[in-house]
View 1: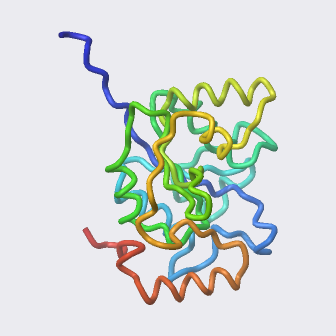
View 2: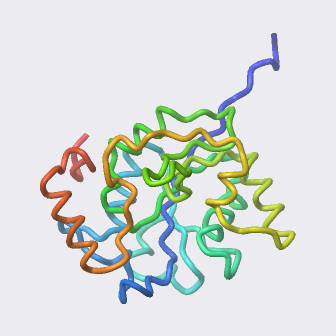
Length: 214
């Protein structure tokens, strides 16, 4: 019947790269892994699975060399953590679903992102990888459908909880077992980053594609 079919919202990619990096002591986005910055690595891996990729930045970061070469979305909200980038992306493209990742997860490569995209359930509010420790949905490796982002924006705008993790726990989220152990680990210190680099070098194909490969 005409009009009975629902269209799947388009999917865009978003790298959250506007954090303060206090524990690292340096801008995480600029740190090098395998000859690439963490931000470059995240964007390349996202570009392998979605057609349009944006980088979420704080006001004042848009002209920094590591960020200005990408399509950026400037945070429209202050003091709400990673929700700022997520909701700013939604305001910019309200019809779109968003595959969101953090720039400081160097083990999160193309195979895992492709797995997440293939498992997307657009009839749910979100699709996310599950954290191994407690099986909670990881908000920084998830697909958010536009309807749930609109509702999250209303909640945050009314002064409610701005935690994406809490939001995913409260809505219809499809949770997936992470196919590669440790893929959701974030690099918060130089020691952690060095350990992750060793992991990538020992199992490169499990984590990402090589730039230039099709």
